[in-house]
Amino acid sequence: MKKVGIVMGSDSDLPIIKKATDMLKSLDIPFEVHIYSAHRTPEEARSFALSARENGFGAIIAAAGMAAHLAGAIAANTTLPVIGIPCKSSNLDGLDALLSTVMMPTGIPVATVAIDGGGNAALLAAQIIAVEDKELAARLDTKRAADAAKVLKKDADVMSQL
Image (cartoon, rainbow, N blue to C red; front, side, top):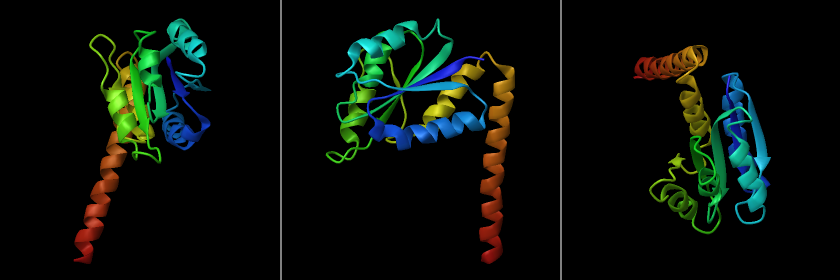
């Protein structure tokens, strides 16, 4: 099975990354997590991206706040799918990171999830890998059915109260 690479610009992004790693663990998907900064460690970030395919990765998640250049810097150095997580900051509440992550130039795409959307980033990475992995696709189907069952149970609970 392909693994998911996860990079964050700072350890302050760890609570968001934890949402992603928890989701990946629940789906039994291997992953690696690193801290690389697009600005402070650009060579390390570039080296990770350039070697990601040969190192067995099928998708990369990149989380950063404020200027949020990390996902774009990673995407510029690999043709693997890159999923950006814009992280909330104290200045503009994450809007700056969202716009930086989503506004990539033609030719260097970055799939972007919601601000602080670690869980959805992991699910999107899983869906990408599941294109070629039937067992993972089945686990995703099972998760989706369980999620639907939870909603329907809540619906029934609400109806019984009214």
